[in-house]
Length: 289
Image 1 (cartoon, rainbow, N blue to C red):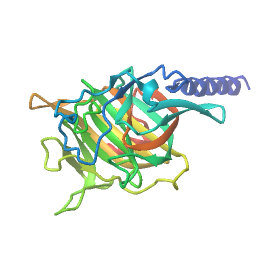
Image 2 (cartoon, rainbow, N blue to C red):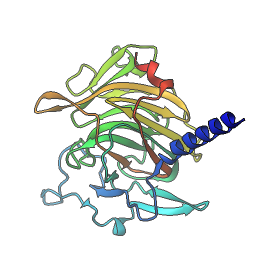
Image 3 (cartoon, rainbow, N blue to C red):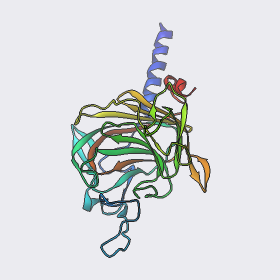
Image 4 (cartoon, helix red, strand yellow):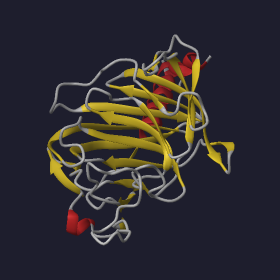
């Protein structure tokens, strides 16, 4: 009887310890995040520095500057819990103050109603950027860090995009002609990104998104350069060998900051949590063999 009692206590303690490892990253003051705002991009944007009517370069709004004025990122309360509203009006991101290496990151999101230029007639768009390093505004839209992207786009949740000079290997079907590579865990790893034959985009395995207006659960697992994009409980992409070009040399990219994008669409985030990992979860290890 005592053995059963002690076994129960050990089980209970291990369960509580595991649960306690989850850290909430969302509060009313956004204490865990910095805010970077760049530009209100126009349809004519071509990747160059925006200019005023006199042709002079316009500086980005910047880091932790004027969010109170523009209200791009605000924390509201729904059902007694904090919810991060992203207006989408100005491109930018909330950026974790801490850098993370091996972790399980999860959140819930739902779309809002508003879209802004230059995407008023395009799909709603945002993303989770991970392994973010260096300065803000180093990719095409001058709004985000060099990083890897877990895309959040209407009908495309879980896609991969490179940011700046990043690259990675993805289990995906080999593309032909104008087709995009499509993720699938039955396929070999395909090299994707800067310096590779596939420049930097892979479609998620399948669309697991819930109807517009409902909350979706997203999970990102990262361990020693490997990552998983999980949408509403289903793995939609398997990735490994995260890297970037540094002075033309492929360089390991397995640690960095997390960014949640503002990209011309209103959306809401809640239950943002992270848990450190000491190993890749057993249930997913076979996906990398």
